[in-house]
Each structure stands twice: as C-alpha cells, then as structure tokens.
Amino acid sequence: MTEAVTPVAHACAVHLGIAAARDLFPGIADAQRRAKFAAELTRQVTDKLRQLHTHPRLPLHAGHFLVGVTQLSSAGEGIMADACDAAAIALRVFLPQPRDALLAARSSRPPYADDFSPAQREHLLCRLQRAGVWQEKVASVAPERAARFAQTSAEVLALADIAVILQPKHRDGLAKPGGVNAFAGQALRSAKPVYALTFWIDEKQQLHLYDELRYPRDKTWIAPCLPAVLPAPELALDDMAQRVAAECAARAQHCREQATRASAAVVRNCLGLAALGLLALLLVCLYRNTIPPSMSWLLLAPCLLLLPGGLLLWRASGGAAATPARLRQRWTDLQLAAEIAHSTRLFAPGASTDDTADSAFAGQAHDFAFLFALALPADQRVLAQTLTVAHLRRMRGIGQADWQVLCDRYRHERLDQPVSGQRAVFAEKLAQVQQHIRAIGLQSAGLAVFAVAVLLVALAVPATAVHPVGVIALVVSLLAVQLPLAALLLQARRCRQKHRMRAQACAALLQDLQHLSQQLQQAASEEAFLALQAQSETRLLSAALDWYRWRRSGD
Image (cartoon, rainbow, N blue to C red; front, side, top):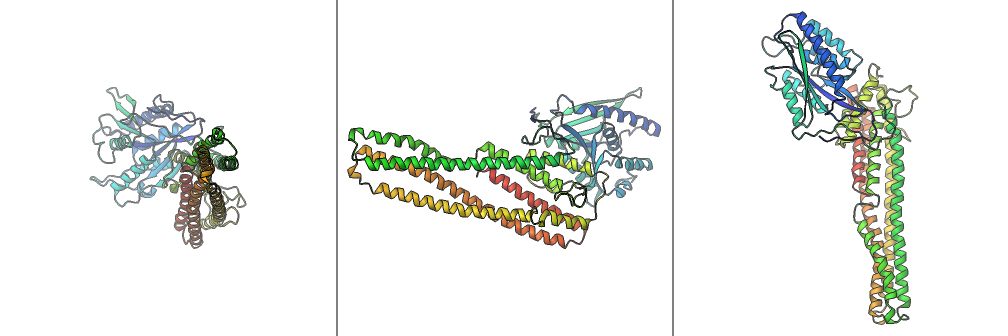
C-alpha cells in the first residue's frame, strides 16, 4: 500500500460512497423488533464510522475529513445517514429523481409496493432537513426507474474515494445490477478501497457487526492529497478558498519574477560568452603574425576554454527551457490552484452588494460541475473537491438572490468590468504577448546581423598568412562567438512560436467571452443563465489549463 504524504495537514475532503441493502431485516415482520434492531445497528455503525479516520490501513492524516455521498433512497441508506449524522460526517445526497417523486415511488416489479412507508417518508424528510446534509441534488433524468438508480449509483461512485457498504450476512440477490455487491465490485475495479460492514442476528437475538477493508487487487491506494505548494500553516475549511486564491496568486507572481530573472540570466550568460569569444577572435586576428609559430598555442588555449560553454548554452537553448523545471512546476501549480480557488469564490455569499468584485454577485448553491468536466491534475482535482465541499457547507440554509440580479452581476463583475473583468485582463495579456513578439523579432534581427558581421570579419583573415595552430584558434574562437548567438536565436525562435500560439489563444478567448457576455445579457431564464455561467467558467479554466500545460512544456 502506497501512502502519499502531505507536508502540511490542510483540510482535505475524503468522500465515502455509501450503498446499503434496501431491506436489512427481510425475515422480521414485527415493526417493534425491526425498530429495535435498526437502532442497535445504527449505534454500531456509528462507532465504526467514528473509528474509520484512524483505521490502521487507511493512510489519512489529521486534516482529512469524511464526507458521505448517498442516494438516501432505501431504508439501509437511511440507517447509514443516521450513523453519519451521529458520527458528525456531512452528507451529500444524490437523489435518483426529484424529492416528491422519490417519496411517491413504487417498485417496478410485482407486487408494486411503495418504496417508503408513511413513517419512512417522514424519516426521509427529517434526514434531508438536517444541518449535516450539505447538498441535495437530482443526479439522473432517465425515464426508467432502473436507469435512474444505475446512473445515480455511478455518480456516487465517481465522486467517492472510499466505498462503504452495509449488508446483512448471507443475503441473497445482492449481486444484481445496482446491488450492494455490484457497487463494491465496481469500486474495486476503479482502484478504490471498499469498507464493508456486515451484520447478522444470532439465536439470542443479539446483533453483531463486523467490518472489513478490501483493497484493489494491486493493494495500492493513495489518499486524496492537496497540491504540495499550498501555503502553510494548515488551511481550515472556512477560509480555504480565500487564502488559496490570495496567497497562491502572490506566490505565483513571485515565481514569475524568478522565472524572468532566470531567463535574463541565460541571456546574460550567452552575451557574456559571445563577448569573450569575440575578444578571443580579435586577439587571433591582431596577433596571428606577431606570435612565433611555436607559441601559437597561446592563442588556441583561451578559445578552447570558451568552446565548452558555448556548446552547453547551445544545447540548453534547444532543450527544455531557460526556467528551471522545479520553478516551472511550482509556478504552474500555484497559478492553477489560485485560478480554481478564485472561480469557486465567485459563488460564495457576499456581505453586501458593494462587496469586492469576486463575491458581489455571489450566493449560489453550486457544486461546480464545470470544474470536474476538465482534465485537472489529480491533486488540483482534490483541491477543487475540497473547495466544493467548503462552499456547500457555507451555502447550507442561505437563500439565493434573484437569478436576473445574479446574472447582471456575474456578467459585469466577472466579464465586463473595465479593470478586473476577465475581458480586460485577457486584452491586456494579449497586448503584452504581442509586444513580446515584436521585441523578440527585433532581438533576433539584431543577433543575426551581429553573427553575420562576426563571420565576415573571420572570413576576411587570409588563411595562408596564419600558422595552422592559428587557423585552429581562429575557427575555435569563431565558434565560441557563434554558438552563444545561435543559442539566443534558437531560444528566441521557440519563444516567438509559443507567444504566437498564446496570442491566438487569447484572441479566441476574448472573442468567446464577448459572445458569452452578449448571451448572458439576453438570457431569458434561470436555466439559460446557469448554463451560460458554467460555460463561461469552463472556458476561463480551460484557458488556465492550457497555460498550465504550455508552461510545463517550457518557456
């Protein structure tokens, strides 16, 4: 089993995908006995869940906190929900259909019994109203009952880090599609551990519960881990989005300055080496006839010392980049984390309509599905999940403003604001990139002219007037000049190509944002607004991901 160690124990969500048998006590008809066993089972399951965080085979640190994900569509999952509430584990409820339809649902097979008795309906409503339920959403719109439950089960499992199942011992029929064992098997095939809770009732009518942690076949599981670049000290759940957005952005700016200095250092090294090579070339040209042939090695020695440096710089210019790989990795991780946190902050409740730009249009109960449609790196996806849980917790019980007000604020604050709106930000970036392209073009032209001039000077020296060793010194000194210049030209060419691609991406993004702003202005319903809002955030985060990959590949 492989354990991922996080340097700082930040708050980090670990989702438990919950599945339980629909009827836990099939052989017991007496309601009082069923209630007694249900209460005892709830108590024992609660104890097991309280101990799960410190399970010796689960590599969880102090910052990890558990969040249950359940359909809450059966009596067994109701008991699991009660146990989670008693164990202070928050719940995200994914319903297979709207609440009213679920309460009135009936079996699709004879004798077509109701899924819930009147008492169970009351219990379900009470469970959904608990403070520990941070999210309630409909996870399927399929017309058929079996398809709805299958889709919802797949949604639960996709979000889960650990599968938790509850079933009676020697229970038949659990391997059918959508059943508990099928859920556990799919979790193992998805490389997720399964925490199986199995109970039985002995002859003395005593209920016994035992637990088993099943690992995938390769016995490896890495606990959810936040990006290692997040700031210290530990990030609490309440202020995580604000701190990550602010502190990661500041640290990313510092990394950018370091990268700029590293690139400038490479340019200085190339120019310095070229200057030394030019000096050596001038010495060869001036003293080629005054130094005795036996002493020509005095001209060759300094040239040979300069040549390895030129070769190294030329090789580096065609390789990864001027910026060190570790610095690039840290910079990109910080910037992407800041972008994700900033996007989630947009939907948090603001103190007033005059609040800061990134929370003035806030107050939306959002699970940020647009984030998880993107190919985020694994640690950044964990950050997005944790920020989602933090937002759902904060929004629990908070009302939402009228959608038209939210739409106008979103369009103005996020897209169209003159200074901090994303259209203005990317217009400025486009202007900077275009300026860099022009500067690189001028630099390349100057370097090319200088390289040709040096070559003409070297060719003007008559080879017949120079001792053979002096000829070698002349060639080596010429290479000592030309190799650093070639390194600069190669680096400039690579940078110019990438900046052109960046300019094209910025121009396309600006066009898309303008189109989205116009569509938001014309949105006729809340559904249209939410769809356009998700599309806008997806487009912006896709641009951040493109930048992430671009920088990771080199400067």
